[in-house]
Image 1 (spheres, rainbow, N blue to C red):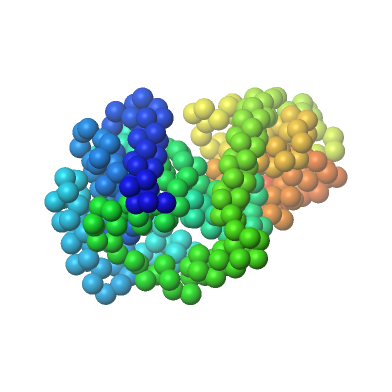
Image 2: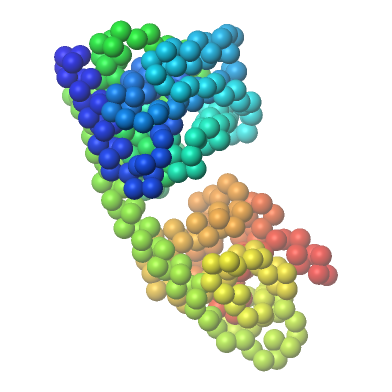
Length: 374
């Protein structure tokens, strides 16, 4: 593709993505994350070309390489010379979850803090090639549909206008503009999984399968996003119903015995809450009388749904309440309290939390609650 056509495609993609934003976001000044690479450089220059008002850019210095501070400052200077309000944001990268994940968390936090307006969209330079790599990573990790759906063009506040374009397009854009770009050596470092996918795995797949692999992976991700949206809508309705449902009626004798004894026949003999349902998720706070840290879910309401929808509700309910690093076996054990209920106990979960079934409801509480009450 000629460089002029590539530049037109980049600008058109940015213009269309900005125009499709919700009205309150569309009127706020955009912030572009710029690393100095071809993708983010093409993005910030295209935004400057199509936006009438001020354009802001954040250059995040991760401090992981010698000379990164000077390089970041020079990039911000060049962006300001081109009419972009640019600033450098230095971050400290931790070690939890690996360097790549830690750097991403630090970068995202810095970009959120740098927004000129709480409504401002944050534009990122991910391309179709990045999307293909993301899908492959999800496949290799055995991820579900949500991860395999890849990155969304718009996920408030993140906007990715270039997801339909190739890296070759952004490289041609920058070449035509005559701007200097910086190739981060981490992107070619074989110690990082994504780098090896980019330079070894995807080229091999393209060769073996006759080309078009990146585009095919991106199309599959798009189809899965449609499926994910449908599942998310149904899961939202199911969760609301499970939070509102009254649950099984408490057994009078058991109810007198105290808050952590069993209720409905067939429910867990473990300690269980006898307190009334605390209400819906809106404005709900932890129940100090029962130890529950989230709105209990009615098992009968959950049982009406297919397992895929039910597990989605459970995953979001558990992680939203503070369960860390939820595993597939833990999720299935939680689902078994609904779909394969035989009076068994629930799983112990990350974050010091445990799940039980009592009086027809799934109850999530701190493990220490029962010990503190003893």
